[in-house]
Length: 276
Image (cartoon, rainbow, N blue to C red; front, side, top):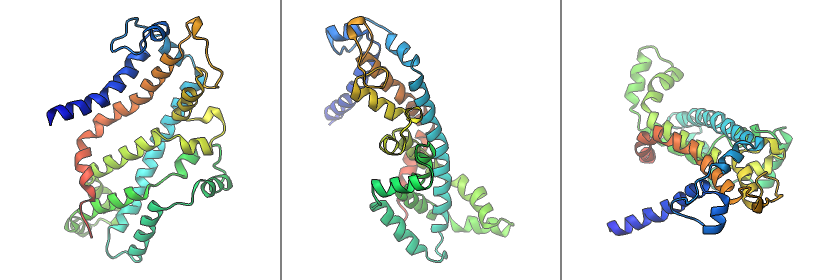
């Protein structure tokens, strides 16, 4: 069993390691020797070229803006919707939950969504990736189930001491729900950082492209400029190593974020265990 687990881990880690080592290999060595476990000719030229590209740096800024602002707004909107739905006395609660479930299973499709974005004036704007994709229905369901596990007696005790419903939510429920909120924030952050399809549909201006769209363009078109013009590797200009350097840089924010929310992750995964 341990051997099987070791092989599975090796299958996952080896491609990541090869991407990492290739990004630090000179283009000549890569063309001559291919992928190496340890680079024979260490080079930072690919990374130097990455940071010389204004469009790449701008795409990182666009992705950071969409990820940070979008995830915070999505978390607030999700919590404000999930908390009332956890109250059995809410009128129409079951109907609202039914609509939420259905919207998670079915959606209007690409064309109707594009029309809504166009008519609301969000087209070709980073806000189209934030507002049009504000809430994930399944995260509402999970967060609502976690709120159901919060003892009602604690909220009632706070209300007896003078708290209103909103104050009880902010001062009592939120501090007790940090694992669920951290996990929800992580899901939203990963979704927004890796988002490329909706950005490809909603955003036409290359200056507004998030990182993943820019990276897709470079990987598919084979261009270090992101414009599909190609490169001349005979001149020593990195091409494949340049691509690998961008892939490595695109994973750094996720690697930085995960350790901060990892302690909440396991507990947060069980937040859908309460049923009502």
